[in-house]
Amino acid sequence: MASLPKTFLTPEEYLEQERRAEFKSEYFQGETSAMAGGSERHGLIQGNVFAALHQQFRGRPCRVYASDLRLKTPPPPLFTYPDVMVICGQPQFGDDRTDTVVNPVLIVEVLSPSTRDYDRGLKFEVYRKLPSLREYVTVAQDKPHIEHWCRSENGRWQLLEVEDLEGVIKFDSVGCVLPLTEIYDKVDWQG
Image (cartoon, rainbow, N blue to C red; front, side, top):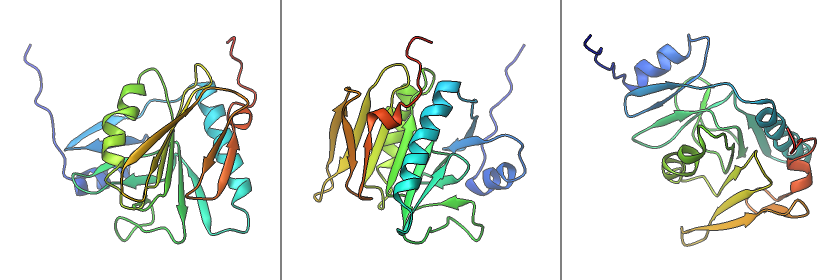
């Protein structure tokens, strides 16, 4: 049996399709990929990061979003839904709709076994093209381990890794500190 040819979409076709879809998908270089649901641990960690940042942003101009808001990167555009995304000041949108932003300063991705290499590799490579992005964080869910990438004044990315539950992550771009005990609150390492 012959395989069916792949259908490639323009960014505009993707957005039209995505805005009607029941389930979210990512888009890159003409192809879409359905987004899988996360595990209980993934959802817990994502919620912990969101809640801790949200609390620290009260009365401040930064906003935190969970994975329901779509992100568009510079060309070739990647359309995706980061686990947690922070925008300081007014959100800028990719078109006349208010469902796709282009100006996060901080992105957090909770790593899953199926997405770990992609989130740390190609996705981060594309995210680095965002002029607004200052910090990118990956959070392991199988053990306490954070990779915190910061863009320096000269545009270079520097890595800080934290593996100690007593450690903290300092987000200079948004003026927040997150202890690993908050990020991993209620995570059962035995399960």
